[in-house]
Amino acid sequence: MSTALRIGVEARLLQHAERIALAHPPIDVASVDFTVRDPTALRGRYGPVLAYMARVELEVERNVLELETLIPNPPEIDRHFYQDVWHPQEERHGQILDKLHRHLGGVPEPADLTSVSVKLKVLGALGHLESMQDVSRMLYYLTGMATERSAVLAYNLLHDGVLELGEDAVARTVLAPIRRQEPGHYAFYLMSARGLWNELSPWQRWLTRRMRSQSFSPVGVSNDVQRARFGDVIGRLGIDRDLDGFAAQVIRAERELLWARDHGLPVPEYVTRAFREAVALAHAVGENETDGGSAPAAAPGAPSSTAST
Image (cartoon, rainbow, N blue to C red; front, side, top):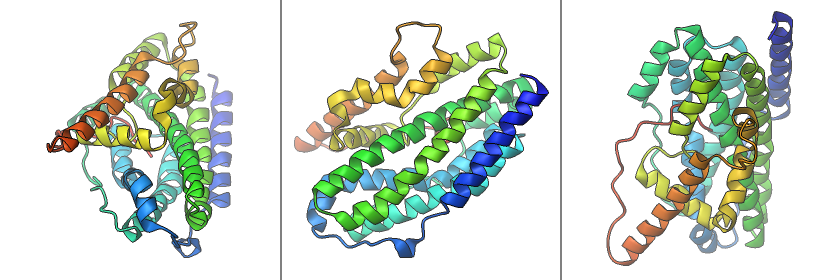
């Protein structure tokens, strides 16, 4: 990409970041109506979903630390976006969802706000080489796209399900404002990924494909306990009824960028495998608990190699 084109891409990204920051400041907690008609029904159907989403949103604090480790010399537009736009919006999402979940009498999932894995530290050390940092940046954008697309789809389903329960206040003042902010994040990652992909050399593209296929994980998953809980969320939202269709929507832009050469590949196998494993593990945990067993202990897993929302 020529210098002029690169400057043009960065200018559009800056305009986009400023536009969504202005249009969607962090949600004012005072604007949220936590009135719930039937707390027992809402907690029974969607309590684990709210707990999971709240934890993932709150872990934006750790995600920023991960990014600062992974990409030691980021473009200024990236730093501006994740520090000044994305972080405050997502943190507020987590605070609101956590408050709602506690209001329903739920027990929150513990959020990891500080851990940075050894893998990330190694990649960050390699990131001092500009060519390797570009690969890390590409992985960050790909993870961001998949995460934000997953969030949009999940919040849409949760919003509709909460409305079906007659919980209009929660749908209107909690879920609707949150889901309005996610598409802007997705657009930022998509524009960034398209711009950078055009700059990568063949070996950088090969390495990106290789690392992505080995590191992909559903949003918020870094151990088997979280994997099972993600599978439970999928089931409660009804996503498991068309898992391949959901995966195709989540990964559509990534497939077009990384795998366009593989004609006829609707969804990379590593994506469908990750989702199916989560559903299977959720079923296994459910059966184990029914039989009087206990859920698996949290495996010592590193946080995802790129930040999630």
